[in-house]
Image 1 (cartoon, one colour):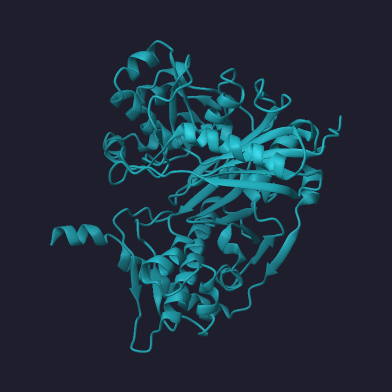
Image 2 (image 1 turned 60 degrees about the horizontal axis):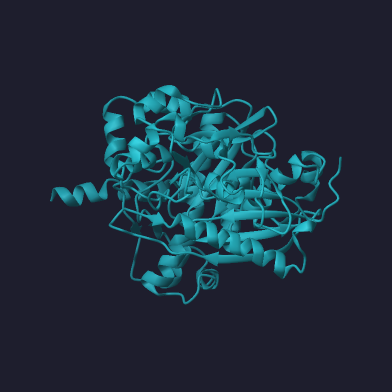
Length: 504
């Protein structure tokens, strides 16, 4: 039965802000509202959020967007949720109060524990079951840290008094006033506790991390009704019917629904995902194997590569070097020169992510001459984003044996025409930018609408996705190959840098 209501409410809970959008039947955004929240840094390497502030900010922007649109909750068919992945919250089941701040995905306090897991020879076990590599990035060690370090937490957990969740779970708990404790399969797949082959919490992993099963949420598909909003949350009870981690939501929002389709989200970092169909592909090139989505009983897998510094390199030009006043100025500055004139910038400010995974690498600029200007450095900075994407894409093709045909792009830096053209040139495939760049919120909305008949099926949703601009490669292949070779040399010179400096 087709749902006759006008909108899907999509909640997009990110690392620095909470955002809500209303999506109409044509897949367009009718209204949007956003609110930033506080970042907490208790000590170097630690990153936290206040879970209560996350909830209140997300609830407030949901109310704001309804009011801004001049409608009420009766016009809303359902709610979709997408969220910063891996961020961990533990709360008391009876009071609903968090035991501790949310430990954010960026937090590195459990790095030593992850090193210990590697030394114990557990990397292969973890990778085979979860598709992940032992790293402080994921939720398991964050949850263990809370249970081990907050007084009384482990005893309460053993008695079934505590609940754990990633941010999707925390929002659903609050929206349903404590009646529903669930997560979706994609968020579960980022905990390092979930078996992506059996789609269950894994007893062996729970033993390794000493996590009592009673704290874990039930795992649901990405598109089904999880529950309804509690009395007084909105004017009427609304079904919560779609949920996915932010990058999986973006993959679905980009309608990368066929095997081999790839998207890249150009944000602070870059997150590249390839749909690999119904078969999980173990990576031999330091990528992650993860769930793309689960709809009904149909499972879709993906390969993922994370780049730590994408658009953040432009922020560094603005705030660090101060050679631009606003991020948008970088394209104009970079266009003042025809190319980087042999200058290569490797933005390994916090190490290198996929496919290198070198935490000791550091930022490097090579090829500087007396003729180098700030325009060359700006151009090299933009080009570094494209080169890093090429490195990940090559690893994906090697792992999957699927030839890349196109790259769908979104995120703030995708509006930069110079970068997108260079990306197409470097990859030697077309780069496609959609009309709506808020693919994360759109993807969550698509999952929700699919569950309740707002859209009849995926084929119907696919017709809503519209391209804005296609960038075609137009550089000579031998020139590109020479530049790629020089880029690889520059990357090699950035590696292991901090180790070397410590030894002197």
